[in-house]
Image (cartoon, rainbow, N blue to C red; front, side, top):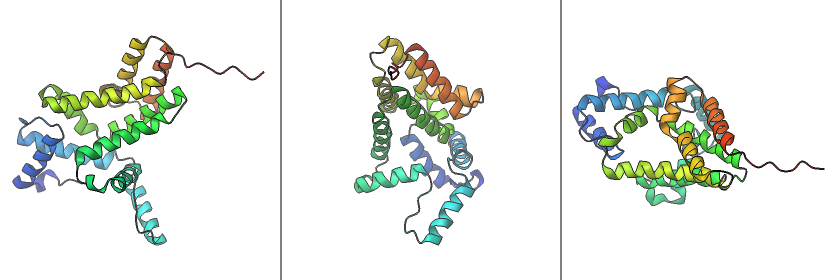
Length: 227
């Protein structure tokens, strides 16, 4: 957890501001905007984490009782642990860790042969990551035009990468241009924001809606029934 606003010294604020800028926050943001971004990240960590405090406590206590020497809480922790073990020198290279996480997630989708199942798995993972970082991502995408060009391009590349992985399984089943456009819409952070934060859908309901929309314009070929 990040320190609360009233406990944040000027030196701590400056250190966190440098980290936020490196992660895409505009450099001309005010000190108060930085404080608010930190408070939002803190609230998201507390309120939107995939595992609740009670669930985390149960996992930790069960691990202690069983004598486990490594206790990992949540799928994100397990994924980071796996990545760091695979490349220990990148443990503090946050850009490299982010790239590894992206590749690992998309790599898992690529192993799913069924196009509809791959689409659903990808959208589910993206919705989970959007919800976990909703506060910070809203600021980043809202101020997209103010970001350094390198950060803008990194966000564009990530969006394109995820879209193309999910499009590949459906390629050839219909109008390619329309398919890419609709899947690009389905994978967009702002689509998730509108459906889940503005309109109140759950992540599962949003995934159902977006999957249905994509399959409506590009039907997945069905196997002939057994005779």
